[in-house]
Image 1: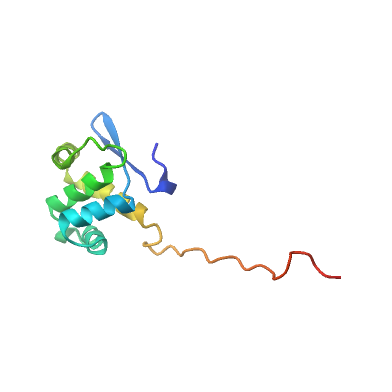
Image 2: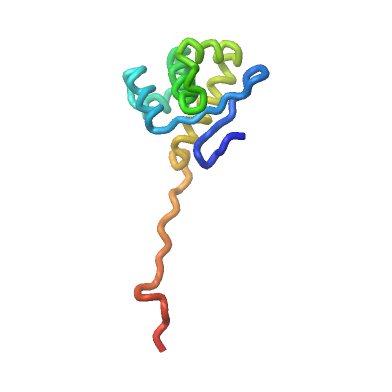
Amino acid sequence: MANEILGEVDFPVGDKTYRLRLSINQIIQVEDLLGIGIIKIAGMFNDVDSLTAGSVRAVLWGALREHHPEVDIMGAGDIMAEARLQSTIEHVGRALQAAFPTAEGKETPSPKRGRAGNGKRST
């Protein structure tokens, strides 16, 4: 089962479940492959009219790298074909969101303010 705290998303395809995760190294690999930055890539997933099958495949490949390093870019395309495009977009989009949990309007908790001193009250 995927660990959401680590930004993992399970992607069921046929009789297999793939675990997706976009760590910083995978994000950089995807950026290098597509020649654009992650903010623009994430924006494409928010505006599906700007998505291409190639960009979806590239991000899927990147998200598979940690748990399924044996899957190459062509294998990612095969998984995408079996899963169908809409399901792939949904799961890869969730993996992108999980990589940036505060990007969707959730506030980062502010540090708790404590009292100055050694923690003992003076009398």
